[in-house]
Image: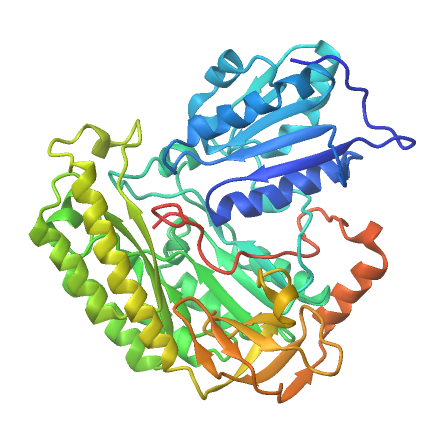
Length: 498
């Protein structure tokens, strides 16, 4: 615990850095943490920060070891004045353990009280002792908090927080709490405010997004929300993540198919293709229902790209069970899959189950699954060659763009496309029309000349921020300014987390 940090002042604002791990919900929470800090007078660090905030995940394997390793690396800096805060799911789970193992940490806060961070940092400074504050239930709905968005063209919009499922492999419901739904009017007001600021794409976000409405008794609420987003003038792309197969109904499929700005992409977690394993996971659907959903989506939206999550080696999984998973992968023909080797999570029922599958068996099955999915992804991408697509130009998605002189963008179905730089200026947030010329398993190339460029309000907003970077962190209470959803679900074994 360090005692050398002055309070933020107008003359010498303190700087911050946020390190985020885990799912999309954590990414969005980090935008709020940044907004809170900037509202309190901090500025984003352009070098060594005065405050480092870890927004942690408890789902990934060895999450605690990774955290304590990072904290250990910062010990000397903490002794020299760096202030450290730890939040997120691991903080909610471990509580006092963090300060006991890393006494140089200043603040520990949970998933239900992220709004307390600035106060806790100041209290730690004044009292010269670590502050640990973990709420057992949500104190303030996160969407009412200030937010610092990372992108002018795309934004997360939370429709709910928490989860009512009881999957035996997942600890998230016990850390995020029961599902709490926002009212449709609040969600649409946020969407409209974002669009007014130049946002072209929103991703509706929830731990179990298509269960939205259960708290206020409207099972059709999510389909209605999708259709309502279709009425927002200037909103060109709508996505959502992650749905649960047990709650995925035909009215949602109809809303996707009939609402032009709802994109033809769907992330539908499978987890396992075996009915026996699904039963052990407490996943309240079976293979037949899952494949039936995929068939109905494809019938209504032929060009839909469907992605998934799969866990290999769940306790008790036999070779026959695993073959059932491979069968579903062959039948569903996912455009991509986030694949995970099962690992124990303390506090989950699955961690104490008998018949834990040997590591070498899990590894071998995992490799077979990845090989199959890689081939399917490549085959499905090859079908895109020759197609003309409109791309939303992205910022920072092509790691080799600098060397190849290409730019990158997302197709309506969320596939990543690298395209030749046109002669005229193209900005992130603008829209370009291209022809796909080559397919790889994880991306497409469009090396023919760009057919057209459409300059957008989002591109204008991006350009304005480059010209006035000091305004890039502008925040607003409850009506976030700018935002950037990740291009695909984070690798977490259960998305966010269906």
